[in-house]
Image (cartoon, rainbow, N blue to C red; front, top):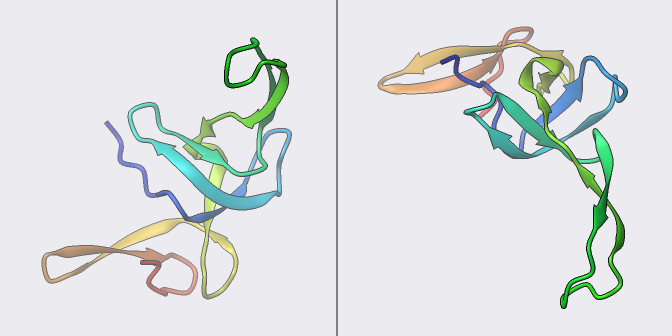
Length: 105
């Protein structure tokens, strides 16, 4: 199984789809299915049944996961969408920007 280079809290840019070009933070990552949920991206409408907590019911707007190949990490230093490289520092792996070489973590 391939490893995801994007984690929760990272700022990403959407590369394709209906929200192409939008930047947002990753709210949740799903490594098993290679998907991420990005705030204000891929917003879907879900019909909610009335419950005791929500007696009115109705329509709810929520973000749906998108595939990790459709997003690119935004480097905090150069502020551009980039691929992620890995540099070893002792026994630790550190994510680095492929464009400017800055450490991401």
